Image (tube, rainbow, N blue to C red; front, top):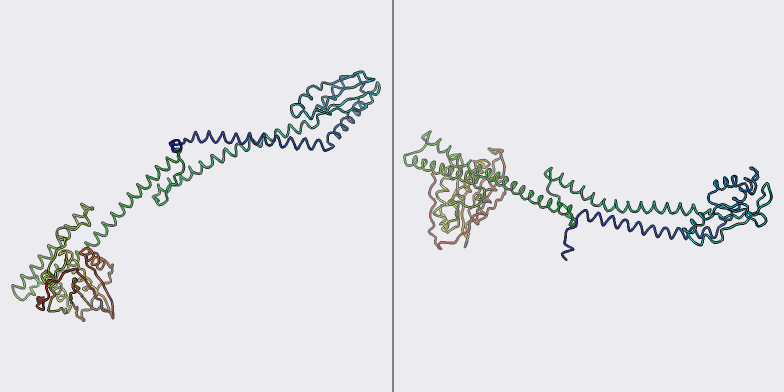
Length: 455
């Protein structure tokens, strides 16, 4: 098992590939040599090729002797003809006396190296007329020898080609893998980390691909974390910036009231000063929270001390926030209709979140609501819930064309964080926001607290 898991080097793979390719080439050579030998033997055995070659050779010798007036003992002329016909040896007899003989030993040994059966029955007898008489000529030819030589050369070429083909096919796989890794490196250098690196094999290339895949995953993780952090910071800035706008609007409103001295008495003046101070503190809290979360991003989603969920009686916390809400609307020319009684129920709530939720609702009403139609505020309780409904009619010509949807998203997000929910509906141009708070009834009583007059 350890041997199977042991890494394989590229040098070892190339050595094995060379051995396998060479073995395949040698095996093919034996197969081709055997098969081609059988085919050539069968062809020469069953065809007239040898007989025709002897006949042509004998005719050529007779023509040469006649044209050159060659005698049976003229070794010079006879050697010249034999050199022109290297694939045949011959001897000349006159009345059983040897007159001339070329050396047939070389041809006989060459034939024996090809196939012993080819030496058998190679001699042919012809009568040739020389200038000094008629001689008996014995021809010993190897006319088929060149075919065997050519066949062996072709076999060798085919086997060498097969060797290189197998070797290149094996190397091509590694070359393609290197090209694939190169493409992955180029993609990663361009910032594309979505394509995984194919890890194949246990050699140096496989280990390199594994390290590349680990590097890609690490880069991808870092990039995702950086992107998530950037998106989180952007969302945080957008949310907090949006939440700062309504308190600033209220500050400007109360500042104008105090500057223009439109209050009725000193008590009302003090009340506006208190509201101005509370709004200023709220702005400071939001800006401090924004600054803190930028310094410590990991704590961005952790509730601060002011955001901690508290179990409060609804009738204790809502009147103050509602008073500021109604005051701002009336100073902007709206009419507000609110129920005189307020349900008594303990709710889980974050004071900071609740104030920001009401500010977001106030901001939307100031932008899009029709001032000629009253804004209605109602509250009802169930066994373990309190539902606050705020409704207004959409203006035919909104005072602001800016619409990012951030306010409603902030409300939904903050309600979810405190265990509640937010639902908005639109019917006949009436926009209704329903805020549902988780709670627990204090007691069954008809003596619910009366909402303080915001005037």
